[in-house]
Image 1 (tube, rainbow over the protein chains, first blue to last red):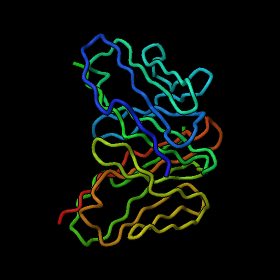
Image 2: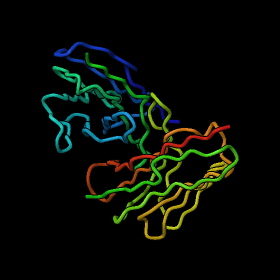
Image 3: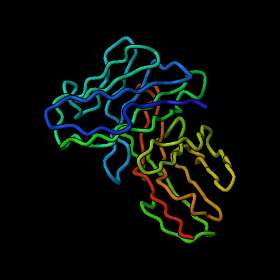
Length: 117
Length: 113
């Protein structure tokens, strides 16, 4: 089946530093990838849509200058949390729809646990 | 704004019992997915339903898409401790970016041996 990986699986950083999270589609190409954030005991909230070769589309309330997204290739999207603060601590998950399958079916990465001290 | 109301939010049952999780909306979805998520992991796709009235079975799990494509249910027969997890429904609307899913709040299921 489709596999989406994320790296790192967890990261702890100091307040004010930047953290980069990678999302890779391992056995298929994805022109679009999605970034979600999940707080404890809550559902997934879409942050932004990453588009290969063009700018990302951000959901309302998500600061594009704080959450930088780069979709450099058909298999890699990165999310950089800039000047991280404790309130940015969360579980970040990416997903990608697989071409050729159902358009609306997404495959999720294993997530990245970010803790900002 | 499309919303998916998922219920119940929490469910704690004994092994062997049956249960049903519901996902309802006033909006029509082009398709609906059910995922299961373990703590500290990403959601894993269980099934996608696309046709109104469709019923899909996955071992002891039965998924149904409403005739009007506004609601869905997940029924688990003879639940086992291994079924424990967070169950999420997610609907795909019409228009918008490709694959943009709207998630329900999830149902945290605990099956006690």
